[in-house]
Length: 488
Image (cartoon, rainbow, N blue to C red; front, side, top):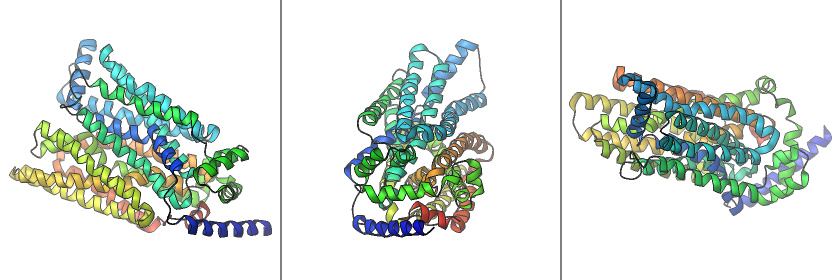
């Protein structure tokens, strides 16, 4: 025990010195570029795939229904078509949940670098497959392509959440972790722009966005093979000390302190490398509960309704089909602005305030949306549509600045190295399952009870804010050992 205490004291001193040296510095160029490229294997495609079917919904539904009619002589009612469309759109999340669960095993055995490469390869197969469905006139190919993309997204978001946490110095962990959420917004707005009828969202051009989605996969695969270092945590686990040293030097510029920190962490946390160990240890159990809860509430925040039915919501409030598609696309810019601000200020504001503030503000925005939809249904005054659009823009800004990007990395940050892959994969799988359920609930609920359907978002946001207020510690600037102590 004496030896351990001496090592711990030495480590804490060097940590304080390192914080003083790096407090006012931005992340290094190599770390930034590596982080940006790594999210091209997951976060970017999540935003792209979720957004692309919104402006192209009518075109894609017509393609699917026409194909089903000619192949199987299926003639569905309007409600049946809505159910089929919700299931097809939601198949992305079924695949993503499977991919996230599988990635827990793969990351632990083969490391984050190979995991990122695998997810990029799967996305390179799935994305153009959805486009090829048009050439082969096959709805089945489109659905399989979307499912494969989901698997790649689940694997990629899990892998880069772990990878970014493990290559980042403590002082830059929030900024680097938030890049995953930022990339989702970039994918969202790019897909929204490509998918509008004025661009590629037409009967003959809709496959092109899926082909273009392959380009980021190729960029990521090339960089991973020829330029990436693996996670120093994984390299130390496998006994490759020289490579771990090189990785630490490349990403943080500080070999000895970073390696010492990782070695101490791995040495003292081997008992939590199984699910039984995670549940049986208070700190890892609380990390799992907090991360999973945040990921679930992301799905029930209203973002899935905005993503899938944004154009429909704007049409229901008085916009034409074309103006609703254009407004939905331009509104996504506010999400990108929110992601930029959240990324830049996450280390200054802290995770706790960011999460609590965005939860409560999103609950307020959803409440106002519910009121304006009710008011429009009662009065049919056109000015209400513009008021709703302002709330729509504000919602995207708040979500993208707060819980949206934070959910990508909070589990990896809260969990110790030995439990990180399992906590991250379980949390993201929970998000993807709920992403599938949320639109399946919201659309029929809106048809039955109208604006009161917003309660499906208001209640989870408010109740989870109470839970996080009581249970979520501030992790800004804290090492994994310090976070584990706070979660005891």
